[in-house]
Amino acid sequence: MSPFALTMGDPAGIGPEIIAKLFAAQPALVQGCFVAGDVQCMRRGAAAVAGDRPPLVVAAIESTAEAAGVPPRCIPVLQAGTAAAALPAFGTVSAEAGRLAADAVLWAARAALRGEVAGIVTAPLHKEALAAAGLPYPGHTELLQAEAAAHAGVPLARMPVRMMLANDELRTVLVSIHVSLREALEAVTVDNVRETLRITDGALAATLGRRPRIAVAGLNPHAGEGGLFGREEIETIAPAIHAAQGDGIDAHGPFAPDTVFMRARRGEFDAVVAMYHDQGLIPVKYLGVEKGVNVTLGLPLVRTSPDHGTAFDIAGSGRADASSLAEALRMARQLAA
Image (tube, one colour):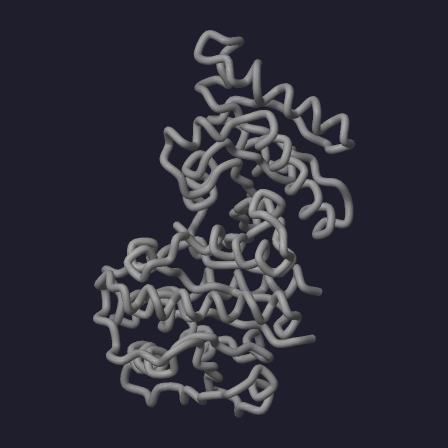
């Protein structure tokens, strides 16, 4: 199999540290992997987690093919874009850190679209730093969607993607992603809900080997209580579910948002389609950020990520937990198999 690319993330955050911890603690898992990022930033991250021991050697490579030849307990790093002029300060938003993080993701995405890597696992970036660097995307998902659409030569609307957060107990897929709550409410349309169900069905059918059983959360308390607390369930969500059922999708709902995630966790459903970002992500993250994985559905490439952020408050301390990154790499390998 082609190698997997791990993108460095924002170098002012914990991305380089959790990558270094993963290479140190789980050499079998990272076999055939390399880092797309900045060599000096990765060396600083490796030093931050080493403690009293010598840090892992960061070996600069020129191509993906060189990753396989790097000795054990070394971190192969391919310089993505121009090297850092100066190392960004830990825990600080800066345009330079945003540029370095974006360069890594852009390089890895284009390599994956060309078939040079089996998939990408992205360490966290900081959305403010990305904006400061002049990138017109609020996060990984939108950036990857734009790159995939450009590679395919199609308008952005013809490359619909969705965010899925998953762990061993629960999967949730979002109708809208990084937008304000007001905009998220406006995104609850028949077409968007139906498209989310279509993408979820296709992605999970490939993973499970069968069509998934999908629950759909309502938007309002008690799923609107028959129209008493809002009519979106009656006028928008239920028609979308009915249309999806006509497409052969095993979709059910809309169900009260405060109980549907518990029902899915008990095994009644394979996934829950949530109407907006926090509605779907809070239940998964409550079960433990060390177990959660972010998967972008709908892309013509494999992309996973830890379900936590840059953790600026502990960056540089060596205390960051690499568990979610490990789970993200395991899932990427499963999806690419």
